[in-house]
Image (cartoon, rainbow, N blue to C red; front, side, top):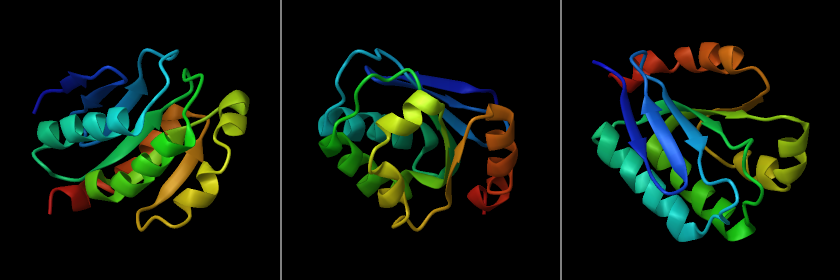
Length: 132
């Protein structure tokens, strides 16, 4: 399988050859709405054929991600992903606000990372189960 790239108004997803999906924020000044989040995840689900995969999300370029968008994201993550690595930095960690507490309720493994290579290494353990 070759890499597949899907771009929406708010995120570019790359379905990597190794079975991991990477989402990177685009249009960082755009305020995310619940509809943006739902639409982006719908596009991801279409691209994967509904197969849940481990995912890396890099929201570090975002300037604002309001609470209603967080709630939509949290409610949909388990439907689209097997595990989630979130790229952070000092600025992003303060912008996450209550999100870390919300992810504690998820039924999928979620970890915050500052190193993308470490995040990919952690996600690799979930790839095999995505093909079962």
